Image (tube, rainbow, N blue to C red; front, side, top):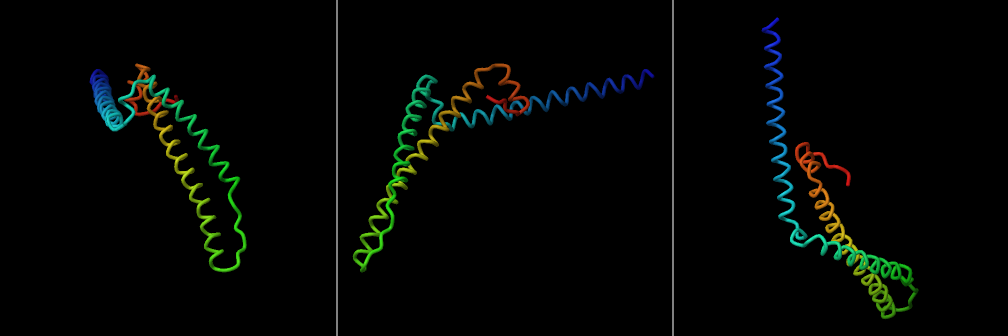
Length: 147
């Protein structure tokens, strides 16, 4: 009986050591991924207070641009019947100008929304990083906590 207990104790020790090594490897891998993401982020050089101000400014701009886009959508011209090639070309250009304005407004809105999401993601990352033990647990397991 003594040998089987020693054998199971040795197996348990090997299992604990393997889990410890795998946990350390996973922690290091997640830490390296986190550092690679932060070094590539353009927001990492700004302090948190500046990012919050920037986020609020982008939110206001997004709201303004969304309102302008809605106005353009509502005021979209209807195609009128024309007689003759010249009138048809002018009508096409009129509709095209309106479509170009709408496309430009949509592009501006989507780029501002994308930048706002980047800022919010950076702030969320900083919030997670400030939570100490939870950050280490996240690195160890690779599981993200809900914010």
